[in-house]
Structures are given as C-alpha cells and as structure tokens.
Length: 286
Image (tube, rainbow, N blue to C red; front, side, top):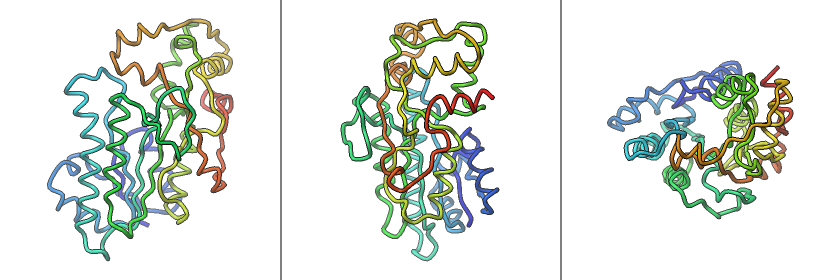
C-alpha cells in the first residue's frame, strides 16, 4: 500500500510514518507548499497513492492573534479543502480509496461527557475550526472511505506537553492548573498510531471516532501521576489567570476540556495499550 501523509514532520507524523513503514507499507510525505498550490499538482501526486492520511495543522497553543488564527484555520480547513478537491477531480480509477484525518475533541463543549453521537459543540474559536475542518472532508465523493479521529492530548516520551512539563516537575515546581478538576482528555502516542494503521486495512473503520483513552482523567490526576512517576511533589497551583496572561484566549486549550469517550473504538474491539493516565505516565517516564 502507498500512503500519502501530510504533516509527516510533526510528532504524530514522524511516529506514524515509522509505524507504517514497519508494517510493510510505503510512505509518501506531502510537501507543505504543495498543499497550498494549484490542486492539479496535488491531484497528480494523489493519483499514485492508495490512501491519504491528513495530519496537517499549525500549533494551536499560542496567542490567537488575527494572523495566528488565520494560520491555524488555513492549515487545517483550507488544506483539507484542497486535498478533497484534488481527490474529487481525479477519475474514479485513479482516486485514493481511503482518506484518514486527524481532528480534535476541542469540537465538544468543555466540562461535559461526549461520545461520537454528541452534537453539543463548543462555542470558541477552536471548536469552530474543528467543525469546519471536519466539514471540509465531508465533501469527498462516494467510494472514498473517510475516517476522522478526534484526538485528545497526545502523550509520549517526545511529546511537546511532556517535554515542557518535565523540567518544572524535576525542579519541584509541578502542579495542577486551577482547582485541577477540569477534564484532561488524553491518549498515548502508541494507541494513536495503532488506530491509524489499523484503519488503513480494516474496512469497518468509517466515519468519526473519539481517539482518547477509555478511562477519563482530570488535570489533577494527570499531574499527580506525573509527580509520582518522577518522584517529585505536585503541590504547586498554576492560576488560570497566569495562563491567560501568557496565551490569551488560547489558554482555554489547557485550562478546560471535555470528557470524550471512545465508544465506537470500544464497540469495534480496539485494544488500547494504555487505557489509564497512570499507565501512560509510567511508560513515558520510564
């Protein structure tokens, strides 16, 4: 199988490319510039592959200035629209048969419990981006199997959030955000790449999935588990107003969150290697 991947240089992309290669498939990284150029060139490339995995997207956690918001939006919505247009414009016999895309649980209203049947959307900038991101791929022609994975916070040894948090914890400056009771939807990187790779060959994968660990956790449980694993106290409290001073409205990305239940993956008997926050933390700190 030949698989085109956008966003292949990111953390998830690099890990996924290696997993796909180890599974005996061929990877075709799509250059970023091609995603914004004439879709005829993109279509020519995609006519040579069996599947497309879309991981493109610029960083969310930064101040939502007008320019940054445009970059966040275009790197997801505009890019997906261009990919879909390129696929749709191909003759049926030359189209990729599978389209798999990352999405985010940020589409949901924070502080509530959601499975894939929920349509209780959030009302902030992030939720509006995710809604448009998913709608863009809904325009794929019939015959292309479409899979959307709504990701929680992806944790791994080299994940950005762990690298940023490890140093403060090692210096006994780690702790919860606010009261720590806000949901912390998470998933281990190995479970992410396993779900993506399985969906390439398992035709029962179709539609939208929450790709989050099946046992929910709060921010307090996350920081407690991290402190315990690193043998450091986790008693500090980071006031939410401090995050707002740093990130502005984007602080909601880490100060709030939904409980996202991976019900569809469970019904399809997908086996999470790391279903709890304690198991995830033990692995990434080992």
